[in-house]
Structure formats: structure tokens, C-alpha cells
Image 1: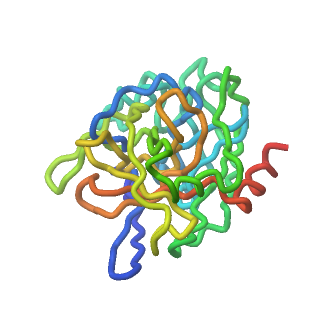
Image 2 (image 1 turned 135 degrees about the vertical axis):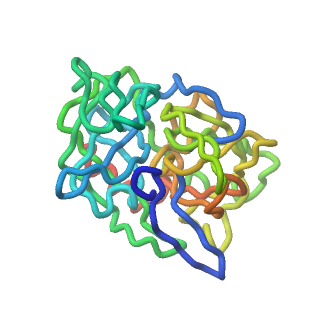
Length: 280
């Protein structure tokens, strides 16, 4: 995300294919009121200045899972859990007066639907494909007490989808606060939590190789992710699912949010062990 337009300025090159960290929900999306534990994360540098935004998921009242590239190079964060966390953003004041995004938690929201953090952790993020280690953790200063949180899969949960695909449910649900449309001339960002369904494309390729989940980003099928959705969850199943099997990581197209998406697989034994270390 470039500062102020939410594009991480990182390019990976593998087999002559350029890939970019992902960012918002596109295509046939709808407002996401089903996953209140999915939040809009704002990150700040050593001087306390706004750096970029991402999405992510609460796994417990204080443990927030996001992408490794989101926590890389920054030292603090603020997380908003309102569905319309930045919807009233004023480009002149560079502030949402309703929620305080991106500078503060509005009165009465801290510890309710907004929290700060000075503890950011990375799963040894490298950005080197296929195993980018693109997972990060934000430990909140204030507890966010909800009725439900994101759920973790068993190790190897997605492996079954690589075979007998016609007998498996290949539907995934993406959630996040990113852009909903972009091209070289036009960008649309609602700064709201949106969700859309996508379909499995590949689990076994040079770009996935057991570490990444490749899904469609095709409006004709459903939707996908774009700039700003980085770190957000990929749920297995429909919108009622809370089972997080992927962390939105990167895409293939720098100009439009289309084609295919890649998420860092959560069902890796080493990553699950790392995550569990924060939950106990």
C-alpha cells in the first residue's frame, strides 16, 4: 500500500510474473455484518505518523491476526471494528469524525469497538515466494469483547481440496476494508467492511506450493480482494462461516483488482503453533 492510497510498495517476481500485496472486496460484494471480529487496522511509524491500512481478524479479545507485510516496518497500530469504520472520511480534514479513523478512537469506542496496540509481531515475514511467511499479529492494549471470534482450522485442512475437487465445497468468503474498484483513472473505496464469495483455483502450483491459497477474483463468479484487504480473512464456506483458512496476501494485477487472489494458508502446522502461542 502506498501511503494515503493504501498500496504496499512491494513487488515480488517469480517466473517473470509480478505480484502485489492485496488490498478491497470487489465484484458482487455486500456489507459484512456477519463478522464483527474483522477489523480495519491502521499502522503508524516511529514518529506516530499514519503509514498504511490493512484488515485482519480477532481470534480472542486481544489477539488480532493480519498479514506479515502489514506489520513490517511499523511500530504501533489502531484497530476499528465498526462496519463503516472509515465511511465518513473527509479528504480535506483526512479524518472520519464519527469513528476517529485514522488518528484516534472516537469518544466511547475505545475498548468497545476500537483499540490501540504497541505490540506487533511477524511470522518472520520475508516476501519470498512461495513461502512468504505473510502472517502478522497485533496484540491489543484494550480487550474487545464480542460474542464470536475468528476460528482456526486443523493443520492440513485445505489439503483435501487438492483432490476430488468435484466432491468438495470450493466456496470461500473474503472479508475486508479495501478498495472495491480501481484502474489507472479511477479508484473507489468505501472504507467499510465488505464481503464476497470466491472459488478455489489452485492449491498446487509454483505460486502456492502448500503455502498459499489461490482463488478467483472474477465478478462473474462472485468477488475477490483488492488494495486494503491485505491481512483480512478468507473463510472456508459461505458468509456464515467463521473458519479462517487464509490471510489475504497478494494479487497479480497492479492496475485493476481482477484475475486471481492469493492468501497465505492458515492451516500450516508451524503457523498454527505460532498463533497458538499468543492465545495461551
